[in-house]
Image (cartoon, rainbow, N blue to C red; front, side):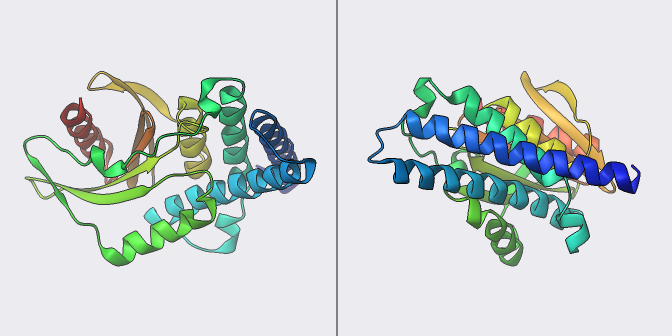
Length: 239
């Protein structure tokens, strides 16, 4: 895109994200038993900060997986795009029982694979770095677990499982926002092992994501066939 169009797109994206996160935070605060107006203002401010922090974390993880760094790549209009999807998911949950406190779910409960694959502990340094990217968004997320998946033929994938907390983040809208915003690509929607999933391919890494509410799973592999096969193995082992 041209530089001028890029600036306009970026401005619109940031403004939309902030406005929608503000609205989503206010609606959520009104749905809870709040003590005072200052408390609601603080809740809204936390929603804005947490939503953008989560969006930034998602973008950071994608760049780290692709081994790309630098402020220019990180400070992109795709961060507020993710924020818009997060706000949309929050607004979609407003006024329903989804606003009730969510029961924490251990993401490691998804750590099962079928025959021909095994789970291997991910590099501790990589796990620490990836988890640190999500630290500022802890108010919107539950626990996050990361593991490697190894196939009998030596192929390796990385499985990231997020307790998205039913309050805000268990919808397919959130997953789509995470994938589109992180990768700058239009995902393909396909069925894998009987479950709706989304795929993105970009420069040496394939990503497949799916929802098993309240968990969101993101699986990274070197190519589409490997990612697809590993995702199917995980889904079938957890059904």
